Amino acid sequence: MKTTSILLLCILVGCGEEQEKREKLPFISEEPIEFSGFLNQDSISVKSETYKGKIWVVEFFFESCPTICPIMNREMKLLQSFYQKSIPKNTLQFLSFSIDPSHDTPSVLNNYKNQLCESCPNWDFLTGEEQKTHQLGINDFKVFAGKDEEAQGGYAHSGAFSLIDKKGFVRGVYNITDFNGSADKREVKRLKSDIYKLMKYE
Image 1 (cartoon, rainbow, N blue to C red):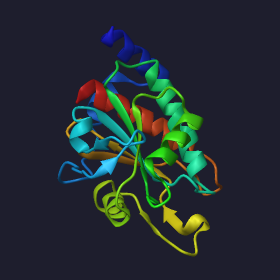
Image 2 (image 1 turned 120 degrees about the vertical axis):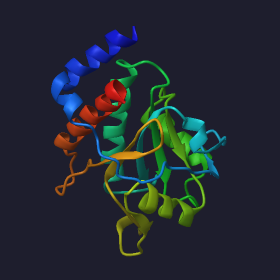
Image 3 (image 1 turned 90 degrees about the vertical axis):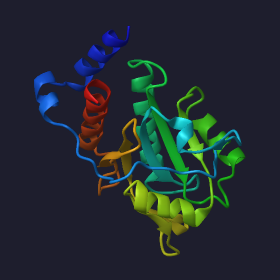
């Protein structure tokens, strides 16, 4: 069953097996990512160990974001739906870190998740201490996240997703939002291809 699912995934993203073998993903982080002190949308305490052994797709966002967050989460939902049908369970984890924890309590994130995706068991929305979250995005996941009074909503952040391998290393960063305010489908396709590489060859 697992082999069939992987083959189906390869067909869907248009992979060439020999080429994929030659194109190993780079290591963008020198150390595996470790974090703790976060609550998910169900008020359950989580840390990096909670998701050990899975590939992660990670974003930094906030619930009241009026600009790029809806685009990002629409694309995250499409990815989640795509992989939910094509790969074994407990293989891939989606994580959305809130950069506005004073507003984004677990109950707010729970309501947000239910509106966005009622049945997404492998997608968690996390909230924790604000400065710690911002530094986690910048230093560990290699995406910008910070407070900015001049930005719409009071926060500025990257429209990128980070791809983390099963050992906790960052293996790719993908600019999911384009300069014109829409999704960059080429980056989405590149992310899908790289997820396949991690699943198939590493």
